[in-house]
Length: 556
Image (cartoon, rainbow, N blue to C red; front, side):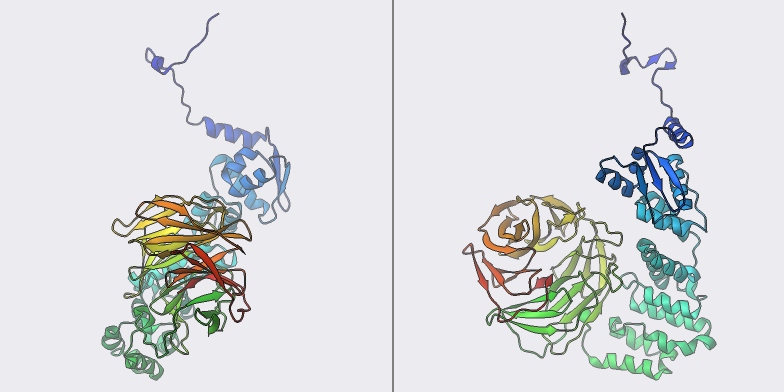
């Protein structure tokens, strides 16, 4: 009895190649399965149609079906999809089996929305490219409004970027945009991509293109500008010499008032304070967005800003008496790239807008390092955890993208220590991370360092004291507080004394060489203190509660 052996060393018989490679085999099989409907093991039901399909094929293309089939243990025979019409589902299933997508002007928005719901990235990307091809500025607002209506955040964000690019580098292309749409275009600009000075020049050019009809609109359009972001030289040499400004009393008064202030805007971080210093203390933001200061000596809370902040799920950081509130979600529940600051030492100080970030994000990490504000990770417009990072220079008022972290993460703790920046823990796809990303400003790159030795950390927060990082977290809900120390010089972790105080999610800051912690879900009713020198814990009971849940990171 003989046996047949295939070996790579005997792959050619004469001039015949014994190895068969049929490049159409896989597609032929998929076409056949789709055409003949053989071996189907699940039926997708829409509003008025049903589609017999194969779980392994549909699930490998769609993240939605992949998760659905996995959760049901692959036993479900019937799946009902209510958010996709039968005509769109037919187009999608044809693509799954044939790799051919039939996109038209009539179905592109519905197809885009369905692909977003079913988590099919290639269809989303193709629909985006289809909509953006040959798009002219006069169509920007129409497309953006459609994107907002259908919650197509990526498309809306791309339109905002295109608008910013046009304002900055191709202003002439905007000259034919109608008045109503031009005003909306200005509202949608991303200030991290286009300066206010470039926007001003674009406004002047647009008005002068049809001066007779548009000059009377200049006064209202001028109000769209944040002139405190203009340089004094630009105000003097360009704005004050513009006829449109000089013939508009209200515009002229705004410019003159700005020049008369004689002080720098919030972006230069040089606002002078008239109030007395209160030390030691720290600042917190509540779930509702109000700001409060805690006086450690007197164990008392005082209100800094009682008006609720319009964005939720923000992150807080502190630099030179300014508290910065970063990202979060807006009043429509969508991730935001907005950044605001307030001088916590100046009586009656209000919020000031800072240049917006490149990326819309919530639950990100933020920290000042070498005089600049770094923001990393978070959750983006599609609900995905982000690896993107960017840095803000208060002196120039501009953001710069830097390299992505190695691991996408939301809810990270970001700490500057020993000349580097560390992004610790956080979540990825709802899994709690132990990894730590380290950013080296000299090489402008991220690398992974020693992982946190404890798993399933709830609400970890970290601070820097004496050239080391102290991380506080709980292992489980309402568990005791665990303390760990990271030594950057030795790239090593050590576990410190724990504290039997049931916390849920910690929020911490360093004041006077000690770590002060609050439970984000409590109302400031108890503050835990860790002393690294003594490796010991104490608590402070404030004179009053805040009356709100503290959900946002502290700032010293």
